[in-house]
Length: 310
Image 1 (cartoon, helix red, strand yellow):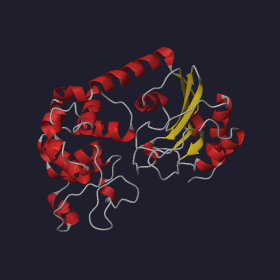
Image 2 (tube, one colour):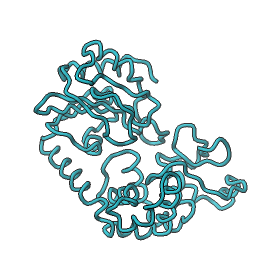
Image 3 (cartoon, one colour):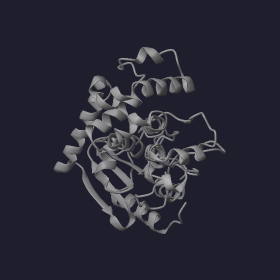
Image 4 (cartoon, helix red, strand yellow):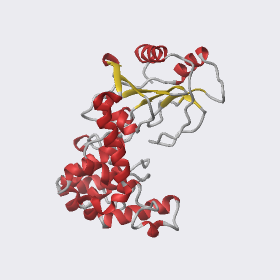
């Protein structure tokens, strides 16, 4: 997000021209790529450098649409599905999932090309991975099976959990009028499983483990991006809710009720060890809570219904 100049993005505060807006930056850049040449030239106003300030699948496919539009436009459906898999954390197809995980894990030890990035870190590593992906985009999109070690096991986990959930191993209840879903399981599950089964953009996971009950609520990232076609409920600041729950359950055993500010892409409310969030990952350590599930659910629903939009 540069402070001025041409901008194509679905991030908050973007300056994308209205006629090219879409739910994903990839969709925006595809709209730009198919626009008339004179419209693109007026928009660029002499700009010759394409910049992305973070590394992910939507970023790669946005760059591809601008720099290699012939490759991206002929694979538009897959590009959008892969970008949505990564940015919205929801399962679409195995191929879209595979492409997203190839991008995410390109430099991992299991990658057949990891040696190209082994000596790199930070922005230099991201820049090199983007360069490799742009050069080999057709192979990544058309033949993700060549990179199966980067996605095969995780795909099996997600699809297995989704199948088990649909057989009843994930109990789903919710507050439809609030766009709020509660999913109860007996074990940890992948966030993509939760998002896909939730059917809502506000999600509470209640894990009824042998040693107690663990709670983690999150606002899905859709309510952070600027979307065009997907109606999402406005966010509430979860920190006052954490204080309310902390009054019912003070800190114990090194754990407490914690919440992120609403400006985080995926704000969480949880009972566990206070820690910074790693974007898009379930990295925080949860601990068993002494509160009953119905009490936590009601407190969240009341906050979502009564608190002012963030």
